[in-house]
Image (cartoon, one colour):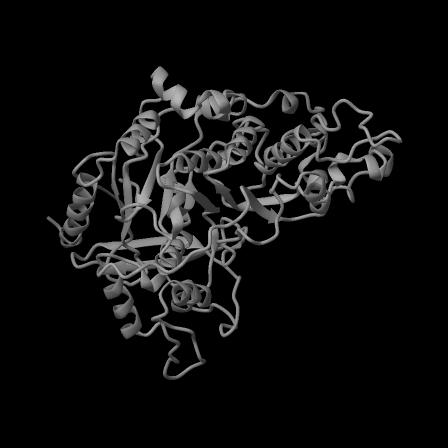
Length: 491
């Protein structure tokens, strides 16, 4: 057995012991209904009758998913001692699979998998958990630095989280919503240039694998004990000062310590890390955590209440509205960009509750039977994102009657119970900054292990830096700035 493999035995043994203690019937039922998608019982429990209008054309089509797996980074590859190593324990197996992102790695897991990171019992932080999604192991390893950055942040914040690994089911990737299919041919489908961002997948399919985030959120929201899910895109990153601040909020044992020589940096002292990990192992009391208020939150990106970004969002497991939005979002799938489907879903939710602007008579009664149908699909992505600035006035309704100009203030006034606006209360992962990185802008890392084998890999670079770092010149600066040196079981 190789040296690094021996170091993983402890992780696997603890993982097996943790699985042995899970006897809760609800958790077993949850695992079954996602693992065995073809059974009638699984279909009915995954998509119960009261949610069927919103999931029969979307989430009911999702195939088998392993929701009992575990995942952990055993070595990051950034420390110069061991190659990057991801360990996955699938389902109820006792053994593990090791991936290093090289050509001889297995292509994928047995099925799409929603894996809890590390080993933990019931969710901490009042049941709120984090979520990250990757459409494949290939994509995960290409975004390895961003992934390790999340391991550092979530560990510091003491936030339990899960990783989705798997592509979008063909039944969803190859079909679009009816209104999307009726879009004028001149609008075409929204595609992305290879030089603009990193995309790993079949770009020729009708819908991109960006939508796996919706499937993952629904599956995690369905997990017993989970009260809320906070999602962040894989390629978003948090700087080291944010990681330190998150740790201090969760367990105030971290301190600032200057580095001898050079410019001042924000770093954890070794003593602080030792105390924090020691306290965690002893089962120190969890910090108080205030449950976010809204059923749905996504970051505002425009004047309309629906003009939001999908790189971070929050959904409350205790609100049926959360499941409705996710079901509509996936059901509205329409092309490469997942935002069009999300915007359509939010507008549908508001329209069904009479919360949108619409022509009204002197008595205030609506004069239109349906104030909103599928107007968002009559615009291309750029026009929808920049609405109304990129749409000629002659092509828009009167301002006071335009449903797409409905503001958050109007939604709150007309529908106080519909809490879907961005007021910042649920921006749990606001420390993460999203960036689009060209595929050829990378940093290369290499090392030689104890057996003389050479390992090398590249990760997307980032220029998103804040004081006290003026720039990320060396690989060492990059590793320290994003906290990549604070992760790893074996190295």
